[in-house]
Amino acid sequence: MNKLHNRPRPLLIAHRGAPIHAPENTFASFQLALDSGAHILETDLWFTKDGVIVCHHDDTVERVTDGSGAIPEMTLDEIKALRVKRSYCGQFDQAKYPNEQIPTLQELLDFTPADISLALELKDPCFGESQRAAQLIDMIRPRIEMGTVMLLSFATNLLWTARQVEPSVWIGEVSMFNPNPTFEGNGVGTTCEAMRSNPDYMKIVRQHNLWVCPLDPAPEDRLAWYVEIGVDAVLTDHPDVTRAALAKLKQ
Image 1 (cartoon, rainbow, N blue to C red):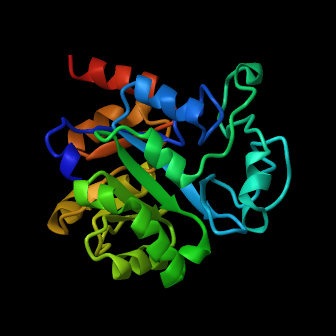
Image 2 (image 1 turned 30 degrees about the horizontal axis):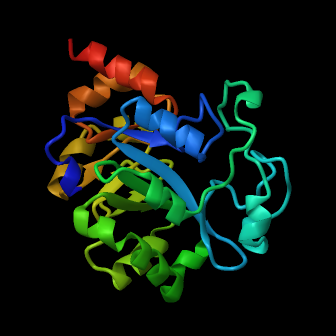
Image 3 (image 1 turned 90 degrees about the horizontal axis):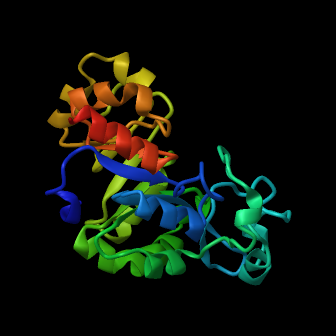
C-alpha cells in the first residue's frame, strides 16, 4: 500500500466504519471512523439487480435496515428507499441516525479522502465473473495506481479473477482459521487463535512477503501481542478506543 508505507505500524482498519457508534457500512459510520483517526475504511461489496456495486455486509437487508429482500434481487432505487438502522455490534441510539442509506461503491470512492485507503471485501459470487470484476477494477483503477485500495475475500477465486483483469491490484485472503499463511497474493488475515497456534506464523508471513492483519475486530486485549509480533494493521469496530489503546501502549 504505497500511501501507507511511511506510517507507523500497526495501521488502523475501521471494520464497517465505526459500527459500535453508528449503523454499519454507512457514511455516518465511516465519518466517525475518519474522525477517530482510522487509516483504512473497510466495507463489503455486492451487486444490485441492476448491476450497481453497493456497500453492505449481508446478501439480505433485514438485519440492519427497515426493509426486507436480497441485495442481488433488488434494484438500486429499491435499496436506496431503505434506511440503515442497526449494526451487528451497535451500542447507539437509533434515533440519532434516521436517514442513513446503503452507499454505492462510487459514493464511497467520492467520499473517501485521497490519503485514506479502502479495504473492499468481495462478498458477491458475481465478482468471479470477468465482466463484473472488470467493472470493479475500472472504478477503483485510480486508487490501484495510488496504492490506496486493497481487495479482500474469504473466496480467493474472486480475488484471482480481479488479478486476471488487473495484475497490479492488491489482494488479501481472509480466513477463519488458517495457521499456515502461504497465500500467493499480497496479504492475509486470520484469527488470533490461528496465529498463536503456529509459533512460526509471522516468520512464514515475512518469508512470503505478506502483509498481515488479524481477523479480530475487538482487539484491545491482544493489542500488546500484535504490536510485539509486528502485524501491519489491526481491525476494529471502535476505532476511537483502539487508537487510544495503541497510544497508551506506545507511551
